[in-house]
Amino acid sequence: MTYDLNITFDDNLVTGNETIDTQHKELIDRIQNFVTACQNGDSKVKAIKMLDYLDEYTDFHFKEEEKLQEKSGYPERENHHEKHEEFKKTIQELHEYLQDYEGPTDRFSELVQKNVIDWLFGHIKTYDRSVAEFIFMRENPKRY
Image 1 (cartoon, helix red, strand yellow):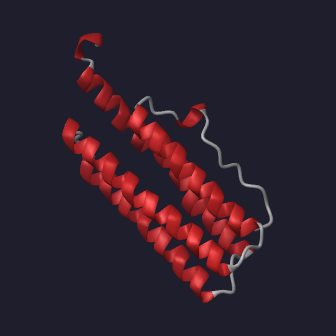
Image 2 (cartoon, rainbow, N blue to C red):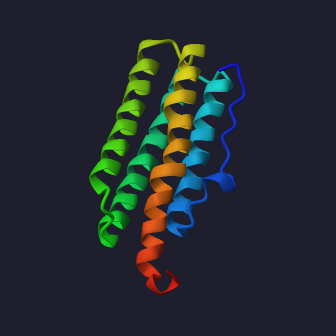
């Protein structure tokens, strides 16, 4: 990976739900670690290990987020779940890509940028933010 990717949790990604935001920070840290392993020209094994580490947390986070949605009666649960499944499939495809090649290539870094970073940041700013707003409104009915 030759170019610099901006992978930081900033105010644009805050949903206002503490649980979700804390987990997003961890998720983004893990993406950063994965990308760093790829950029450093670390071995294929290390890149795969970091991808596993990311995958494991992604799975945990999505389950937690979906539990929150269920508990609050969020109406778009199904659609949101499908988006999560899409992302998990992407991680699986990256895994296969790493297995097939000697290690991370420029093409691989483009896939990570588009299918992991851009996707996740877009997902947080739209889907996750609407979940957080829904939960907030549910928990604070007097404020509206």
